[in-house]
Amino acid sequence: MLQFVLKRLVQGLLVVLAVTSIVFVVTRMVGDPVALMLPLSASDAQRTEFSAAIGLDKPLLQQYLRFLGDIATLDFGDSLWQRRPAINVVAERLPNTLLLISAGLGTAVVLSIPLGAIAALRPGGMVDRITVSAGLLGLAMPQFWLGLMFIMIFAVKLKWLPTSGMGTPAHLVLPALTLALTPLARFTMMVRAAMIDELNKPYIKTARAKGLTLPRILRVHTLRNILVPFLSISGWELITALSGYTVVVETVFAWPGLGLTAVQAIQRGDLFLMQAIVFVIAFLVVLIGIAMDIVAKAIDPRMELN
Image (tube, rainbow, N blue to C red):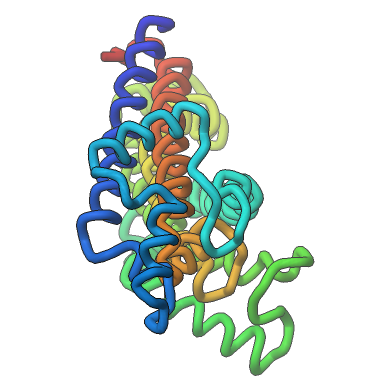
């Protein structure tokens, strides 16, 4: 196990280095970073002075070597927008994103298991058909549209919840629901399909013949057997939410997390803050992947770790 973890950590660090290096090259090769950071009215002398102040007047290779050294010490420079260390901005906004993801995916996990299990008990029945239809609808709805509909209905018309921002638990409800519905649909469909497959296996008939009740069979045997695939899809949803979904949700609801911060950094041409955000997200994705493999091995010792 230790050898596997060390191997994955090395691979993960190489992935993080590759991703951040790509961002470094793209932000410097596509367009003029100085032109993005300064107003159009800036003079040539101001552009030259600013370029020298942030180290963009050096050759690209020299900039890259300095960039690698800065990564080793988590020094990404000062955010040109916030006027303070970029890594501090990331550290301030990251907990907000993790709170949103925890609330959204936690809701999806808690609701999907009973919904999928109930639907699987009678395939083709009314409950099953309603569950499948609702799941397909949930997968088809774009999150930005869903978020806007939630704002119009629950915030503007009914005035039950705030429209945007962060401050009270009520501010978390709409963004968390928006983030939860697509994973909830996917989780429910996966649990339903896996449950139907498990309930048709011979060991279930043997357990029923021994007198075990259906709730006990579901709790002790069936749920345990679907945990590994459920964990895999949960890990993928967590990674997707961290690296993509939250950008949309945080932008719609003005939630002050990393997703909204990344959009604002791009709009302001703040390449130092963007580099810090990409590095932290890539590093978290690697850690999540390793953690999911370790948990899956703990659940099913027969699983091979490569």
